[in-house]
Image 1 (cartoon, rainbow, N blue to C red):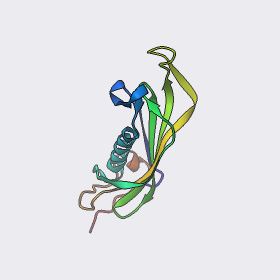
Image 2 (cartoon, rainbow, N blue to C red):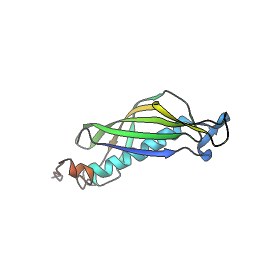
Image 3 (spheres, one colour):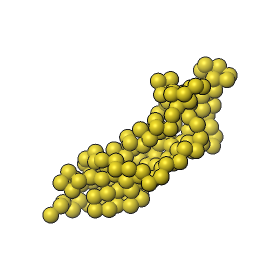
Image 4 (cartoon, rainbow, N blue to C red):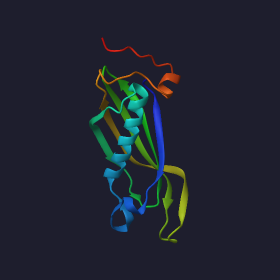
Amino acid sequence: MEGLNVELRMRLSAADAHYGGNLVDGAHGLEIFGDIVTELAIHTDGDEGLFAGYEKVEFLAPLAAGDFVRATGTIVRMGNTSRTVDLELWKEIAARPDISNSAADYLEQPVIATRARGTYVVRKDHSRGPQGRAVAAGARFNPPA
């Protein structure tokens, strides 16, 4: 199932703003990554699993309330119970409060805002095997002995 990927698109709302100038804190991007990892775990194991930690996190560009983002996650390594995931958060539409309260620009070239690598774990006794897109990709389930 290495190479399996999922994505999630969303608008960052005024409630997501944490700093002056309607800036959204980097931790919000990590929360979105948690949702991506949960979906991947359901595909690979039929269980939400546990996001064990990050190897690295890079905050590369600011995000603001009103921006539209796309988060992606791709499994790059499948261990016995652990799965390593590359994660990216891209800004695709940028709010333009400098023009008006409702102005926004579609970005011809999306901007990567956050990049990370992390690992999630699904206990063997909780794994129910591949689900959804993982099954469609030909994954097979070998139940624990």
